[in-house]
Image 1 (spheres, rainbow, N blue to C red):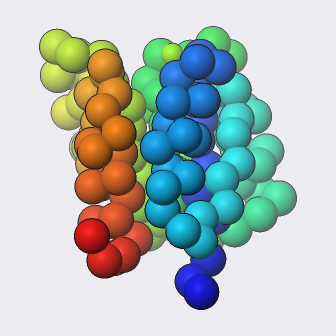
Image 2: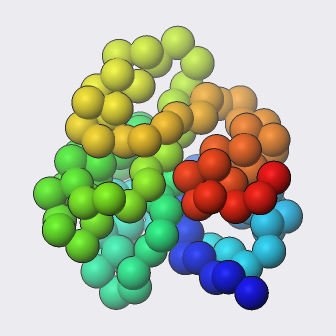
Image 3: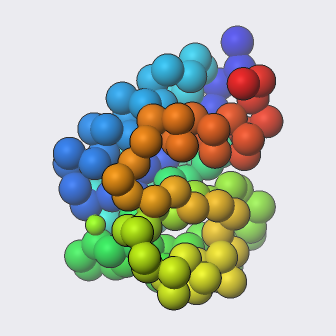
Length: 126
Ligand SMILES: [Mg+2]
């Protein structure tokens, strides 16, 4: 069975729980949670992750800063990054994509949205 490490960086515990719940429907994923960008970076340096989902608006370090730091790390130059934005925040979306994010999902988060993007970026069957 394939195993992928997925990091979720999101300051809202409710939102994290929702994302974890959705991702548990895909077998073979090990899910790690971080509450902000600094916590996320700490976890990225401790384990090799295969995909990162990150919120944009977070205390301490936001998602845009995290995306730019992740992309400047040779270990993570190519790891898929999905950003989580609020509806209408098209500027954040564009900035994140310009900084190297691969895809975005929009709040309110739908389970199918998370599953589709994760399967696509990890090349998993639907
Ligand atoms: Mg937030």
